[in-house]
Amino acid sequence: MKTIYFQYWTESEAGWGQRPDGFILHLSLEDHKKFLDDYWDKMPRMSRANTLILTGLLTEGMVTLYPLKWMGDQQSTVIL
Image (cartoon, rainbow, N blue to C red; front, side, top):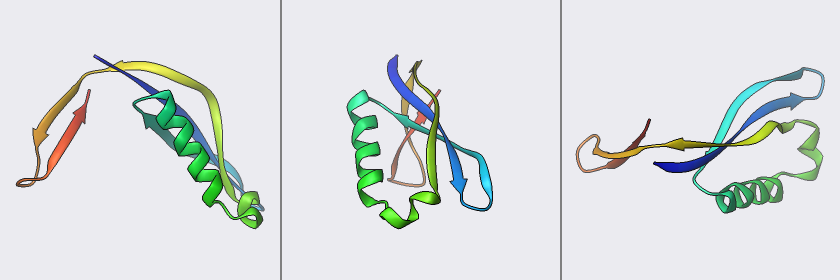
């Protein structure tokens, strides 16, 4: 079993309101932090009125990862 971390996003768009926009999944807290830092670093200051908002608590869970072959020689992972 592997520990994972996930957090829900809400899209917020000026004039259109807010709506659920899925979630992010990370294999470590460091990956989660790096993703958020990179996301905000790349987000133009002017477009922050139309952006994604983290909603809910960062949640820890357990998964089992199964490697498998998918479409020829490409390596994929199934998360259960």
